[in-house]
Amino acid sequence: MGGRYKTWIIFLLACSAAGCATIYNPATERKELIWISTQQEIALGQDMDAQIRKKMEMLRDPRMEARLAGIGARIAKVSDRQEVSYTFRIVKDNAYNAFAIPGGFLYVNSGLMDAADDDELAGVLGHEIGHVAARHSIKKLQAALGYQLLLGLAMGLSGQQTMGKALDIVFEVSSLGYSREDEYLADKLAVRYSSRAGFNPYGMVAFFMKLKDEAKRRGPDFHVEFFSSHPETDKRIQRVKDEISRLNTR
Ligand code: ZN
Image (cartoon, rainbow, N blue to C red):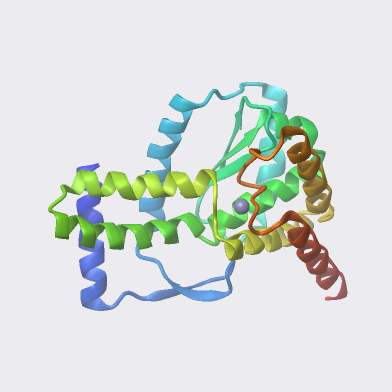
């Protein structure tokens, strides 16, 4: 990890010396300063994926994997981010959860796959690919690295310790808790991508209803990437419906 950390410091310094170029991100419809390259992001994703596969049990079922990969490929093909290749894995767990990490690695729980029909699964994958396309966790990591770098320098921490803290933040962000705005945007992209790929975008609404039922069953401690108390699910459902009607009048 030390080597990669050094590369990033060099990037940071090069960036501040030369003035980093901003790129237009079609997912967020904004110009953004991205100094972690796609290549670096993929390398980071591969490290994280290896750790996740050590910690969580993956389900190997050819029929379920084919269904997930098939729907995933259709969504990925129409997404705003084509330069990463997406990898889809099934986590053996019955909670209705899914999450994405940097570099295009996506994880869907077996319980969610069993509960969701194809349109609903397309909505879920559109939401997660939306986070990747918008580079939500990478932007958080950039901010954390910048901050940790300064803090690390001030406290005399080693590169490895500093990097470790920054990575913890990415893990946290990927498994639970993006900002409210990030969630709304990922929902909007889910509607956009799933309808572009020929799925019914109402699948997202139907899935939210199933999530609400599951949350009721599991009680107040229920917390997955998809179902956070902020923003509230009812508000998200309303926004998704608004987005679908905009789609239809276009
Ligand atoms: Zn999300």
